[in-house]
Length: 443
Image (cartoon, rainbow, N blue to C red; front, side, top):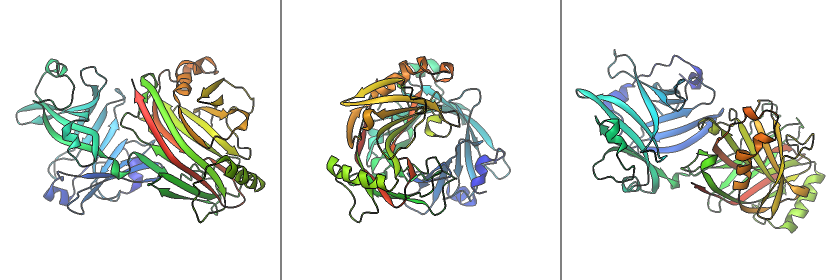
């Protein structure tokens, strides 16, 4: 079937002979596999055997999620999920028939909240014996989830049986209820590295074939070093090597955001240093920057955020309504949207650093806000709460742009990344980011 099947609207799920004979494993490990052509891929593997299943999350495709009955997309499609066009946060799940001649089955997975406490959940109903029963996935930090080695949070699937909506609504929504029947558990294991993703992200099709970006990841520091060379000026960004931060509460409504403290050290170094740069002092930077600019390097160091009024679109940069960038420094004279008319929407201070906020729209129509340090200051070490910037987006931005009705009123914050936009270099250069982290708190 191949990767092209993600754009096919006629996929018919079926069960492989192996799955028919062996069934679905009772225990699976989930790991981030790779990203190819903007498609997120996760591998579900059985620890005690070589059996594996693949989950694809393709952007701008007919299906939102595709589950393959094997380790890659060449295997049969086992199930698909598509967002319901009427209820945007519900999903139509298509499952294979249980026998060779049986037709595929459709189930509706509905998003809900537990007892109006804004605890996210997803429920579905299926036929059990002589009548329908309801099951619900609930976010959890309870002892059942923590019983999985390395897990501090996750999800539990609770069997609600044939209980009425009134009975379900009377539950307190807390973890570890005595009478609840848990039939499945999903735990997030930090050792899998799913709390962050490092990616070289050479995305521009106009980039020359002899250019490159190479990423080296140091999980112990933590740090990453991106060596790149793009010697053709296409008047656009060639790549954005980054680290992306995942969190159990993301995506989150801006109105629910109380604090988002972000920290990082960064520096640029000429060439491909044999000893990885870990000195982020201003004296080293002054020497490095002078040489980099003499070689025509154009690049920045920036935080990048994506927001939308649809929580799922926040995870796809190419379709999110808002991109928000915070530049901590730059080399050369790279360009940002809104700079051409030098119209500053506002000045916002984070800690001891003042930023000027600009606005523009890219070719895809995305609202792009860019916060640039005043007086071209380069901040090599930064550890501050970014909430004042998001507060501006939530409460003030619509008052200062030409199309305020087109801006989401209370968007979700999804993607949080730190990296470098690379424009131009006459030789190899290395961007280093280290000691980064995120501390997120909601209301």
